Amino acid sequence: MDLNNEQLKLENQLCFPLYASAKEVVKRYKPYLDEIGLTYTQYIAMMVLWEHETINVKKLGEYLYLDSGTLTPLLKRLESAGFIERNRDSNDERNVIIKLTPAGEALKVPASLIPEKIKQCLPITEEEAITLYRLLYKLLGSN
Image (cartoon, rainbow, N blue to C red; front, side, top):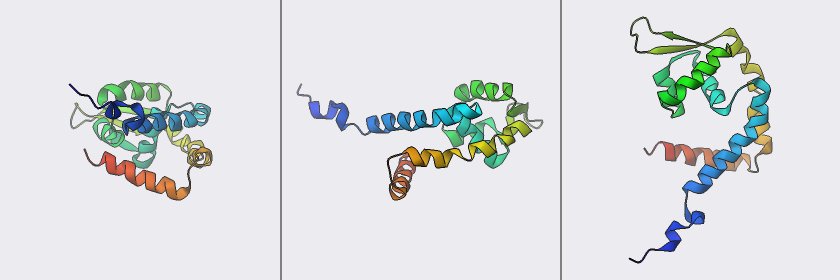
């Protein structure tokens, strides 16, 4: 069997620079998120909550591309920190509704400074960032 070694080289894989870049970007968020007591995944969950204030777990998972097995422990930690409340939907006990607490709402102010800090530490122009954003969402929309 004649295998084409070029197709198996790491440098020829689209997935690798996406994966490595995502890790690097998330690593740049860490010092800013440490200041407000959130992990990156908690931060993106809070971003959805700051936008919607109340949401069910299933819808939150759809926004974040995360399953309930990943969300449940994350939400438990946010609840323990006092940033959210989790309650069963009175109309359908299978649904869990997530709601911001005043403490969770208050995090929005320091968190609002983070995107600009991240922009300053990424080595791409505004135009490149817009192009990259469009391309990545094109990939996400193709599934």
